[in-house]
Amino acid sequence: MRAFHAAVAAISLFCAALASVLLAVAGLIIVWMVTWRSLGNSTSWELELSIFLMVASLFLASPFTLLTKGHVGVDLLPHYLSSKNAQRLQTFTHFLGLAICLFLTWYCFQFALEAYIKNDRTESVWAPPKWPLYATMPIGLGLTALQYVSLLTSPPAKTEAY
Image 1 (spheres, helix red, strand yellow):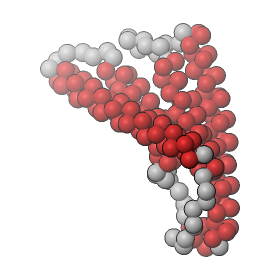
Image 2: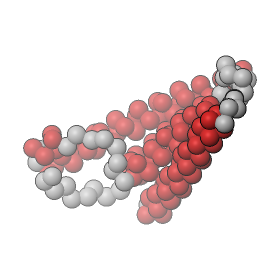
Image 3: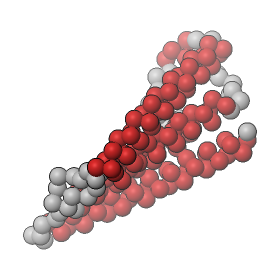
Image 4: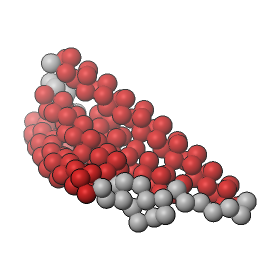
């Protein structure tokens, strides 16, 4: 089981690194676009590609954010619960997060597949296909679900008062 947890953590770390690169590239594209337009030229693909890259980075960074407990959480209730009940609440929320991620993974997979089959394109001058952007959704959410499985199967950590 330790190998599974290490593999999921490594995948999450790789996705975070990839998301960082995508975000940096999006920033460079925006700088290029602003510079190019300030010189009086027009642009056609820069903004759309940077949006695609930023959305992809969001979904790909999600498993690592869960791994490092970076998602927004409300810890007032566990603070007032006993250690045992706080652990139960955490397990419940992990199962709930897993169920939501699995549902969204399936739904987004169908969405991306439909865009691929129909060859849906954006309505811009550049008109890239939509499916690569949509494909990052089930990938990121599926890997987040896998990270939830890893959290649920890991030995419980001692919960202390916050």
